[in-house]
Image (cartoon, rainbow, N blue to C red):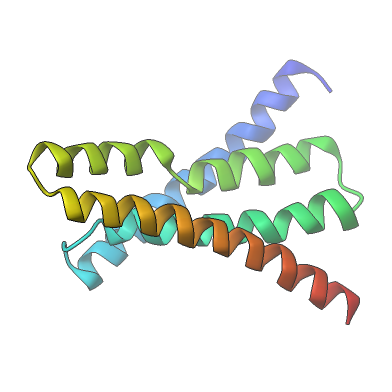
Length: 130
């Protein structure tokens, strides 16, 4: 696969994932308020769950062209989730003296995202077997 095709495939997935992240973040923040950055937490958990599901489907089950695998796993889920925003929001909380809030934000993002990815893998494998 050429470099151009690789970049194009990842770019298409990234455009979709980043757009989803933006709108889902806006919706969650407007709905749940500003106690924590719920939008970032929500997209990280959702994106991790989706990544877990797609990893099973794309890497273990489906016979997809490499371009589609890159588009879904790297582009879509990579840009739907956001470690950089989690880091920035947590540093901002720390700089304002909100240490407990920052710690909770980091803990929830890591624990729930890892749990969501594992659940996505397990659920998808279960559904494919049954």
